[in-house]
Amino acid sequence: MRIVLFGPPGVGKGSQAQFLSEREKVTHISTGILLRRAIRSESKLGLEAASYVEQGKLVPGPLVRSLAEAAMTSCQYDRFVLDGYPRTIEQADWLAEFLKSHNTHLDTVLSLVVSNEDIIDRLSKRRVNRITGENYHLDFKPPPADAEPGVIIQRIDDLPEAILPRLKIYQESTHPVQEYYRSLGLLQEIEGTGSFEQVYDRILAAIMNSAG
Ligand code: AMP
Image (cartoon, rainbow, N blue to C red; front, side, top):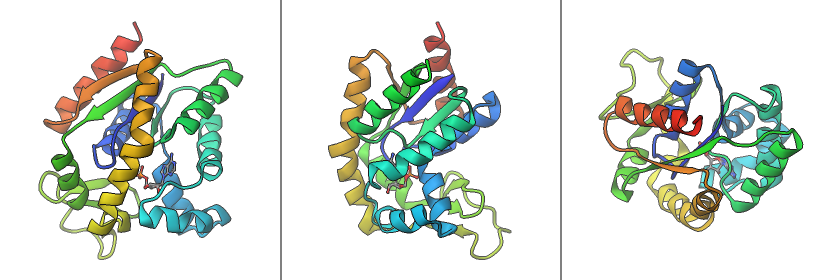
């Protein structure tokens, strides 16, 4: 199972990919989580990436690629769900070449679709456990009331001033990746509204569909 979970920021990719990885025993590879971890640990890569992530801009390709490459190598190029990668046509091209060089390929690309208003609502009400990376939503999945102070935070790039630039970057650079995968016959669009379980069931059905 080699899957890309695709869609705009805030569409719910991260939570769905996390759940899928636990249920189906696949490795969840989120370049956003890997970058935030690198930033927290103040590694060289983290220091280089920090200002891009904080402003909601795309981190330069080679930096993100090295994280994606290491993660796919650790799981021997199989049983993974990519979340937040690829975000540009260049990254998608590299990914195809990388998998091909290891005699493998993507099985399917699942694109989660929700309205723009929903996205802005989800991003502005998202909170995250800065240690585990688990996401919450102030209305639908409130953070635990007994969490240690300072553990549940709002991501800097979820603040209002970063949301619109992120959506613009998504439209300009990332959305074309969807058409790229459609032209390869790999894309399945999935309605991202409804309960978490409903969306998860649609994802699972699409994975079964791609397995033939
Ligand atoms: P995410 O958690 O997927 O929303 O990613 C958070 C931030 O990490 C993005 O806004 C970018 O700054 C950076 N990032 C994550 N994945 C990529 C990628 N594939 N290419 C470039 N930047 C990325």
